[in-house]
Image (tube, rainbow, N blue to C red):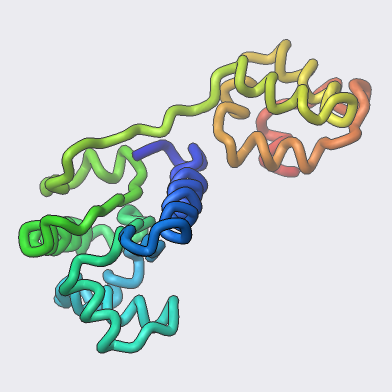
Length: 202
């Protein structure tokens, strides 16, 4: 769970890379697959198993028979992004189908990403063992990131230090990255009148 731009997808992909590394060293490990739940909403009456078989074929060019075998043998770790991208009227149904899948395939490990507010607005809850909420960046973390670029982002760092509104704005990893790309190499004079609306314009 996390706010928009907080790094949910990036965190999911880092987890996937770590699991891939483990699987490459030990072929008895489950196979991590990253899929986006938004496509489930295109046919909202389908089971998760049916959807998985289709998505494994579409995303990973995996045959239906192999996909079904992997699912039956619980040989996959499912890393599912974008529950909040499922059309709102179908979101609760998607959670219900995921819970049915978890009851039938209890060994299969599952991670689901969703914006925290969209998840709180659901009447259904995922039957997972735990939840992690990705936090926004602290000022210390923002400074550490900007320090790595040294002189290229020194002016941006100084402006952010003096502006609480910009600090809050930069607490999103996505926004901080955009700011860094946009204002890399700018001087303090160029950023002297920087404010949040102008950042949106940029």
